[in-house]
Length: 243
Image (cartoon, rainbow, N blue to C red; front, side):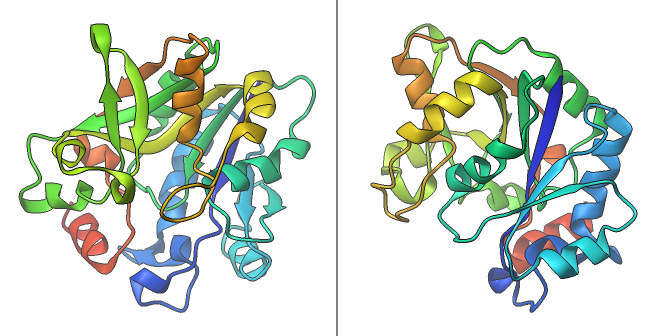
């Protein structure tokens, strides 16, 4: 059984909006509704978990009343790893796979969700995109994490942009944040995350480095950049509107 966790606790500060970020309109609809439609169409999980803050639960649940969702409160904004950890107690014992999605990435298709969820997880699989450069609308990918590959082109780790050196910033394979986990491995290793980074947050992406250090082969599913665009700023929203 596969469970989907959707992270949606972010505020709309960088969007210059009083709304929670996932409710900022894209072509007249809250951006998260595009993702929700893809999740429903994928038929992967009939009742996804959605992680929200105590401040935005009411307004988000009202906006998404047409969908069958189970709400989880992230009481403090301590990063993506912390957000997923808040949802772990809500996973049923028969769940064996956990798919983590983000409410501010409206272009992900149901087809990609199905493919991603179908991988047999020894530890985890990540979803990436490869851009030709960072020019034009591809510049919207510039502030995102980079995929670091090592010997035999294996994925070794994800480095967040704010922690990347100049060489790592030139990597054009981009982390999208979507991750698919073996549930038991995830629950066991979330407690290994540390917040010794520039943001002092618990990064879910650090689990890639942990899995690699344990000898796991990290699979990566790559999708088209147009399907990959997330919305974190007004500039991103303009690019999304154009696409």
